[in-house]
Image (cartoon, rainbow, N blue to C red; front, side, top):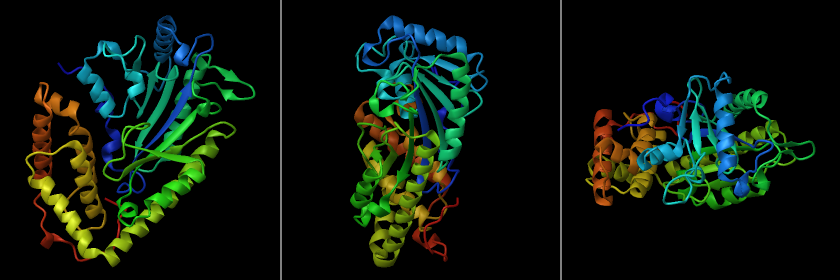
Length: 375
């Protein structure tokens, strides 16, 4: 049974490949951490605290304009596959799902808005994680969405706040504004030119950090990085948003320059990598997810460099989500072994690329200039 039919856009509106630099920046997320006065939070929160927090949120959501008409999903009530689908769609985190084999802790939930690309995780590391997720580089717009929802919830709920330190959170690095903004980026040019270490080191020196596909603690695969701020204390939300936007735009400039270097100094090798990646995706009969991500990196690079005509960034974005294990099992209607998942993944990719049309080297457009930000 599909338990997720009522989620607006199924949590996938960020795949649309809109916003600035969609070939380099897949998505932008802004998140606010909030806690309720009068209830223990963090590791000290007990079951009665978590359930009380959920009840208060449920009562308030119906009076909050942005959340009205949305969907509240109780994690313990969902099947394991449905919970994994939410994780694969980046609507929830591993912390919300918990580590107990018996399932998520009572009180864990996520509320997805019916009118905007925002959601609220309840009883994750903090009582509330208000988050907005948009396609492309749109940090300011994502911030405005969560700021509006934060104000609406703040009129209904007494958030824990200290006049000197700001909003109180479970982790000291979030104290203050409680804001964490991140940008999901594809940086193959910097990796292939061996400039990525220097760029990432520079980000650390200006208060930013990087993570993998699923956030903190996850591996970097396929040259995809999540870049975010590290601390919030002593800085306003506007300062944090502006700083991240400026730094990310500098990284984008470095990535564009690196791609131009590849075209100029290693064109034959670069074209070979791109076409090999496309050929494997187009005809492979089995693909692991890690292998898929690495091959997708090459195809995305070819599309950006105008070496692979006839493909859409949107289709490549969809592959990243619908080829994950829980999505493959949902489509198959049953549990899949690892080998079965690899076969189903390859079949899905072949179907998508077939609908995009057969691409051959001879189809290349003549104006192969450089990276393009428009699709």
